[in-house]
Image (cartoon, rainbow, N blue to C red; front, side):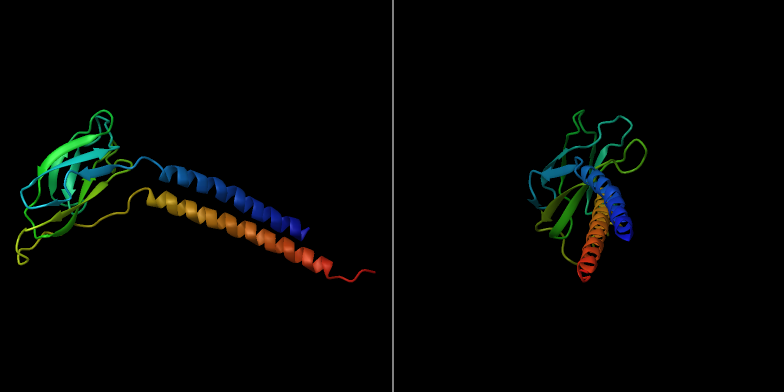
Length: 185
């Protein structure tokens, strides 16, 4: 009876964990916003064209803002995506110290929260910029992207299911081993 109870607990844990893992994986495979640049190396003042995909074209959503070096960075471009979610925008490379930076394309949904799948990111290397004695303003805090939460939940659910199934398997094996070790009368 104890063997059946343990196996039942393991099956229940697996029955709960597997759908959670599938749902989290499906959500994590959503279309994420992308951002690509015509040039990833530029000198200050050079024209750069950015192309993006998978942004919200909902009229109540905010325009897409391409920000320098983080979500809270200086806005280099602002524009609305086309009806198909694609974005094209041209801006000047900022006059900053030479180095490697990231451009972040942010957008707020109709509810005021970051739009699903955003931000899009693209690397940018600035050459021949300001002297190192001139400070670059900090980018501000960054927050984790939304898909990281469901992926973590899915992995935790999968591990819980595997642990429950493994525990049931071990319990069943021990039960069989104990019953087979008894002398035959």
